Amino acid sequence: MKTLEIFIKPWEKASKKAYAIRHEVFIREQGVPEDMELDEYDPRAEHVLAHQNGQCIATARLVRLDANSAQIGRMAVLVAFRGQGIGKAMLKELIELAMSEGISNLVLHSQVSAISFYEKLGFKADGPIYQEAGIPHRNMILLLQRKFHP
Image (cartoon, rainbow, N blue to C red):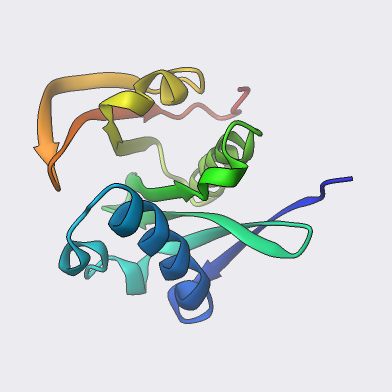
């Protein structure tokens, strides 16, 4: 029986596990330059870590942009665990977290290949496709209501 647990932690407590996953997915698998992976937002972001049977297998973060807006980013699931609903569970957790903090506008930079994943949870594509770390991306937005129902 697979048990999925999702934890929300500050960078000080999430950095080792979150960076290990991001390094594997973004740097090793997708070729993102290592110097682009960590940024000034990590220390002030809230980080989600997903554990399955005690192993940390996925991560993402929520960065507050202003009083009403936040950005979801650095969402990564280890390749062996994809397609099991882990990304969806983390995204739902981040949306609930944003709502609990009074956020009404969520944004993210989706890899073009992941747009349909985000659309299933209500995000809408916004603006043109652009390159970020050599990977095609498109901005997506979600306007939050009082109650979120995926």
